[in-house]
Each structure stands twice: as C-alpha cells, then as structure tokens.
View 1 (tube, rainbow, N blue to C red):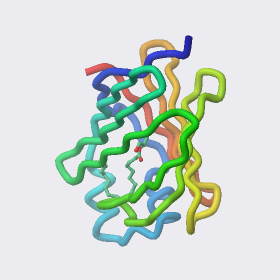
View 2 (cartoon, helix red, strand yellow):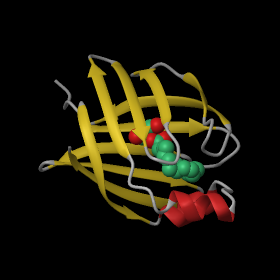
View 3 (cartoon, rainbow, N blue to C red):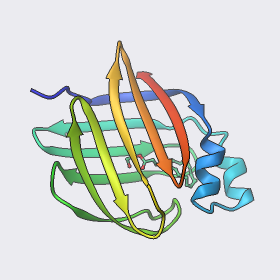
View 4 (spheres, protein in one colour):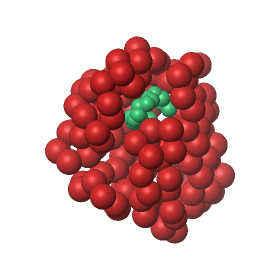
Length: 134
Ligand code: VL7
C-alpha cells in the first residue's frame, strides 16, 4: 500500500524557487510576484488516480493523472510549455518526469514526519518546498 498524500497542505518553506523559475525562463516581473506567494497544495489520491491543485493568490494550477500513464501536460499559467509527463512511485516517493523542451525536468513528493515535501527540478536547478497540513 503506497502512502496517502491526500489533504490540504500549506507551504512553510521554499528553497531556490528563483533558480527553478530562471531555468524555466520565467520573466523578472513574474518571478518577483511568484516568490512572494505561499501556495497551498490540495491533493486527492484515489488508488492510482490523482488530482493536485496548487492554489495561490497569484495563480492556480491543476494537474490530473494516473500512475504509470503518460499524459499531455500544458503548464498553462506557469511557463506555458507542453510536456509528456509520467508519474510513478519510486518507493514512497511520487515522482514525475516532464519530458519536453527543458532537460531533466520533473518533481517528486513524499511525506516525512507530518510534513509533505516537494522537490521540483529543471536543468540542474532544484527547488525544495515543505508543506504542513492546513
Ligand atoms: C506548480 C511554478 C514557476 C511560474 C506562479 C507561481 C506561483 C503557483 O507543478 C507543480 O506542482 C506539481 C507537484 O505538486 C503538481 O503540478 C508546481 C508551481 C510551479 C513554476 C512558473 C511562476 C508563476 C503559483 C501555481
């Protein structure tokens, strides 16, 4: 039985978001606003089906997928790119590879103690975020 990431989670720390956004080519004005926001993750996990909402006062982002099934991701409102994305369990880490224009792009989520972790990576930059239950 895999872990259950379901719930509403508030961001409590955000490391190297700037480097990650630069790797994605996000413009200065957008980065300035984006780094101020503390997004909330709303995760719904039902067997192999997931919905992950990233909610903030600035922008919202929604992704839905099934484990092991590649899907077309449009990062609309973020860097506006198309990716072929695939999410799998790497032991207890939910891991996504986002194939597209940007090399080595993806993210991984896991739980440690009472906290939800997220690492987002792109072209050598790693952004580390931590969340606590709302
Ligand atoms: C989604 C932002 C930077 C543009 C707005 C930033 C603040 C947040 O894909 C993501 O999460 C995965 C794993 O949980 C599920 O989709 C992260 C936020 C990354 C990238 C681009 C800055 C603009 C608003 C919605």
